[in-house]
Image 1: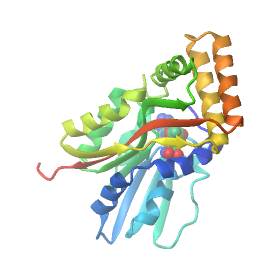
Image 2 (image 1 turned 90 degrees about the vertical axis):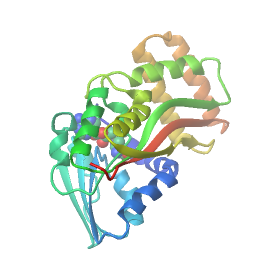
Image 3 (image 1 turned 180 degrees about the vertical axis):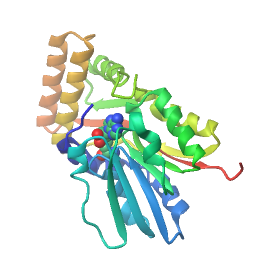
Length: 267
Ligand SMILES: C[S@@+](CC[C@H](N)C(=O)[O-])C[C@H]1O[C@@H](n2cnc3c(N)ncnc32)[C@H](O)[C@@H]1O
């Protein structure tokens, strides 16, 4: 599955605003006092997590930005202040997760990835991180909550279709979709991690027209692909919702969860 740089750019400010600050504080506190840290960002896209964390970490930083999309990797930050070192790693995480984690690392990060992966891959991530005793910061896993205001009679059907679509294969086997965050926390706890988690919801206000239109179009496409909602109903719903956006009357909340998983001291 591919993601356009335009979409990642559009969502980044909303992601930044949504990221759970208590979870980020826990991440930065865990790294505090180290002269240097090495961070591996899995499925980095154009570098959203790098930009979110970089200013909050006071140590010298080395980042390994990993993605299988070369055009996105090419748009990651190429130059940085002298105390920051960035390398990109083109790699298919479904095939080569272990290669991404090998080598020096103090922290693994990821954002908007876990809802794309399968239960099996998630288990692999937890085990491979645990073997290397790596803390993991995973931001912005979609959790299935969609709230649209004002309500439309077809919202529920469309949201159900979107959540069904979320579970289809995104390149890692059947995706966990909305179940990902809960499953991930359980997986990490099972391999001996303590996990701090919190909501990181997108909140789109009436003025956030571009992202609302993009989101609604994506949801309509997902509903169309699933085929459970008749096409005329999908079109009618999208037309009504777009009219509300154009009139400056639409708000949308999309539920996400952030967590920071730390290996516990004993072993
Ligand atoms: C929703 S985007 C999130 C990007 C970025 N983390 C962010 O928050 O903006 C998902 C990312 O996963 C990457 N991705 C998807 N499948 C992958 C795979 N098999 N191996 C490596 N990266 C993959 C995509 O290229 C994309 O950059």
